Length: 197
Length: 197
DNA sequence: AGTCAAAATAAACGATCATTCACTTAATGT
DNA sequence: ACATTAAGTGAATGATCGTTTATTTTGACT
Image 1 (tube, chains in turn green, purple, brown, cyan):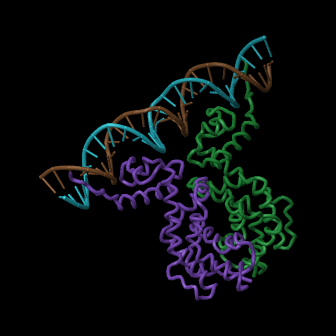
Image 2: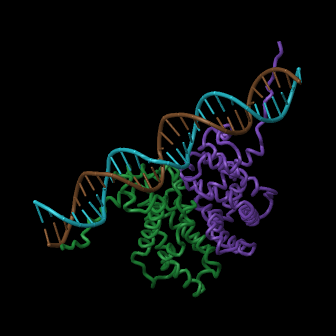
Image 3: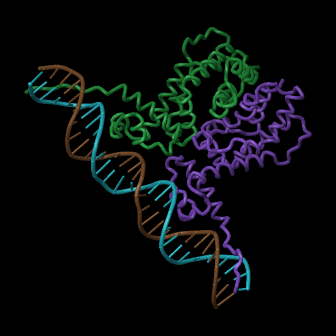
């Protein structure tokens, strides 16, 4: 008797990438309400049924797309991370990397914003996302220990050192305001003034 | 010949209010994607067809609900507005009124956040919303003139004096952080440190 | 009480929804 | 070349979508 082993046809990376991009594009342009599985599939150039090979259902597709972007952002802002720099410089570097990422992938960023303000957000494990941002978070903790940063509640701190980036990257704001290096520098000064002791 | 004048049956305020609340509740709990006209109608205790007496279509229902809340917020934060107070005090009062509003109507606030991060946002006239916040905006302008507030781009300023309120009122953040008067006071100190000269 | 007009609705419209099914295609080791 | 297995799909599923239509109800007026 002949035994056949686990020879399997491998999943197509190009299709996966196309599906990822199509999901983001369609959700950004038409919203969650109008983004049907068949429309996403058509945008990706695949069959609606194929989506169910890569994802359990529509919900899981949307959630995993979100997590993938968040993971991506976390890894990009920590590239060449130098813990030995002064805390202010570390944070400023993260700011510039963040604005650079958003300039390069405005659609990725917009998707995460839309997602995290929707009820889908509650289906994602908060800790799983936070761990992608651990290094920079630890910098803040060190700053508090060293009495460089105000010793206030952590959510309050992040509301001033990270959240303004979101505000300033909002598509509507960016229509009137070009976030060039000079403006980023200015904005970071305000952020640092808010949190520094 | 008998002439009959414009005697019309008036629209039901209770139904309008129920529709308003139902829209917010359903969109918050299930998102735009799962909020159908019939589900909203059922939640409001009216017929789906009745919605089309009050609104041109589904889109207009969602948009007018958003505008109504924004208008409401604008009027509440300007109650007892005293232009003669020091600028810092005026802004602090607005902060407390804003947090008070969100505590009282977390669902209203959540709806506006979800809405303004969706593609629906682009269908709303930016200026129409902004005018509801003119008085407090003018205070910032006066602060710049009087060299009390940093003379930086206006979008950058609002990213630090208003946007952190949004960040701190986020439903997920509020799970871990009780925004009592003490925390609001602390957070406002950071906001003021960011924008003051 | 009777009349009008608009509010309100139940039922129905075609379209589209998420998902499944029966089937074909492609890549692999023998 | 062939057998195997999962990738991949077109078509069909019943359900639900947003909206319209035909009809009934309601309330302010004579």
